[in-house]
Image (cartoon, rainbow, N blue to C red; front, side, top):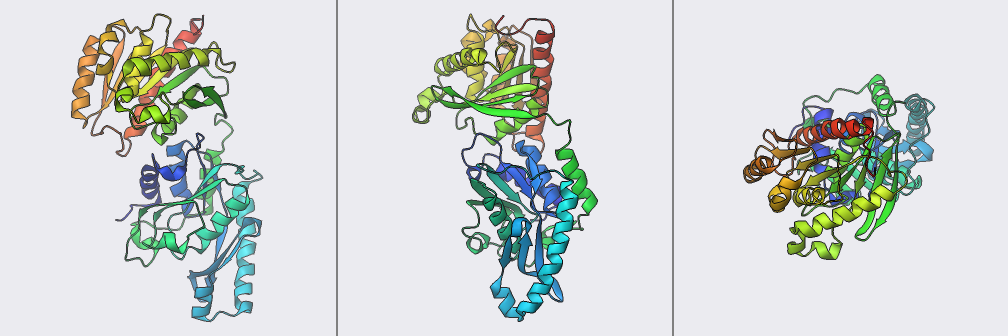
Length: 438
């Protein structure tokens, strides 16, 4: 496998991380920490895909004299230090020679850290899942130093993620991180650069531009907290001055921790929309396939959750909508037809609206059905459901996408379509004074 460049590698790594159990069960997005300079373009794509904050962890390789690309150790911020004694012994480097190279690298490290941060404090890591990202792992010295650094800063869980690494990299770095993710781990491995068609050096200006974009003042601040539901805690995310709130109804095999839904939620935050991610079933109930496909049960749970959300102070009075995936779409349509329901809009992703067929004519909320073009059976089910809806509705097919929208750009298309639909209908309702809970 060869990557076109680091951006291409970052997109591949983001896809590998989507729905990965490596990220753990934290409802919040991880903090993505890049190893500049080469790891930054990779991390930019990962952070964007996961809706995660982006920071850097400045690490400098301590290279063998005369062979600077061969790491005999690494140094990092906060005094982090790693010595690869195997390499030191193999090439016969003296303590004095090591100390001289280390001193030069620490001086360069201080310069870069000051330049990259531009006075900004490091992203808080205490209690968070931290995703350490580089463009690849060779000896592992810099990755090891980075993992130690973020752990010392309070990270609750450390995940090391790279596009490419040697096949035995997890055993080499055992204990450095809680989980490891690599897109490609070949048995034949000489250097990271051999797996990139374009492996040019990343300049400081590129690092600064990427970090400035990620930390620009106009980026909406999103406050997160949890709200107790009978099926477990709901993850609430509220951007400043929200214009509406979207409740996510998850389908079979998914839940509130789904990175796919988190990515859609992050896109909605940019439209000023708060999001509520929660589970319709308890873990025990989710093992019963009958309950997973029961639209009455799922729709009833969603309706109950909606009443709770509409009483919750940060969200009370906001117009609301439903985003349903797979069987969660049936739950959204079922709940929308309840007599006391008044969602401003509904979006279905790869949904099973046929499960709520009896209630489709009763739905009055503007409804958008999004289906992958390669998901033939579900396309037909949605075409039929679209013909039975009596409300304003649209069917949007994403060309070439499968049921999970894992193809490059497919989930981004879903997120954009959903954001525009909700912004159009929920904002209109708010501007017209018809606010939910009225």
